[in-house]
Image (cartoon, rainbow, N blue to C red; front, side, top):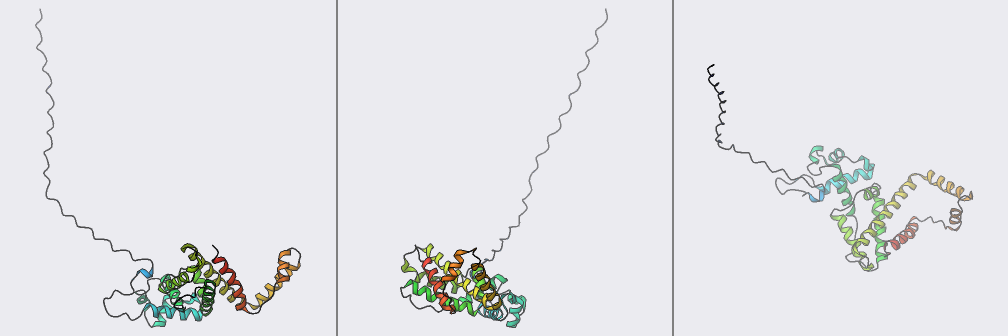
Length: 263
């Protein structure tokens, strides 16, 4: 009888890999505290102080810079105004001017507000909205005629500097007896301002192009006589020509005031 074979030895178990030894954290590295970001400069120049109060007295001021820019615009037009030209007029370096006026848009705002300083308001409104607004419109037209570059700038940029706010305050005081709410009175101000600016611009166009003006009248007369525009022909037939531009302005501004004060 054959002898039994001894049992085969069991394979040895694979040794377990040793667990990694715990890592003892070292001292934390100090983190550098982030520096606070510098506050962003306000976009509106009216929110920027004219001077900080530190250091020597500035050589120039916003008023002198605006006056120099207005003188250039009155003589050569708004397109001639640049930081370089204004700096030269003041005898200053161009880059030094940016310490007072950071960019061209700010210069335009200063010019707008300087022009608004030319208004002369009575201590108190008369209480007659229509008459007070008529006087205000005439005064505005006078200022716009004095500065031919101004109408386009008034329409393009809001005049909210100190003198612009003085104008707004006066307009709201004048229209207080109308019974309109604040929104309606602000809209009335925009309506009247827009009309006066447009009228001033049309005056400039007519004055600069006498030939164009004469041709325009002839062209419209021919169109009216063609029979294609019967209402235009009727308007021409019943219109009374006026050679007085102020009388024409009075009639037109009265209609605008009526619309502006309508509830």
